[in-house]
Image (tube, rainbow, N blue to C red):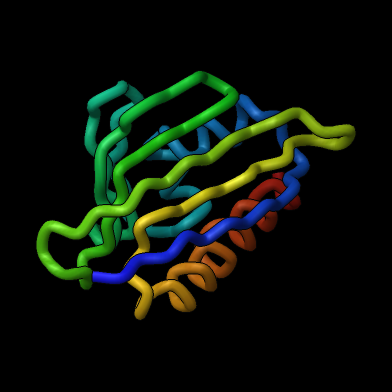
Length: 131
């Protein structure tokens, strides 16, 4: 199966530690997505988000700095997993998040890339704006 890599970078009005928590706390994740999430904050721990649409495992965690996960969508062929790396760096105003999502099935790249914008970046910014 052919795969591709998605790269996105976005700024948030939050600290790297706040964003790290938003991705690794079930309650915080559900707060910005509006969907059930079960997330382990430990290396090797599993997660399911968006009511089971995406799932995977934490491969490396550096608090406030980096999250590396195996990641798969429920509509992908059985056994297909991608690699998600989120790097958080302090910026003049808040945090810069750099995302590299590799191993995404080629026929899903456009929808997954748009999904990151629609279901993550926009709702996180909305939640932060309203806090």
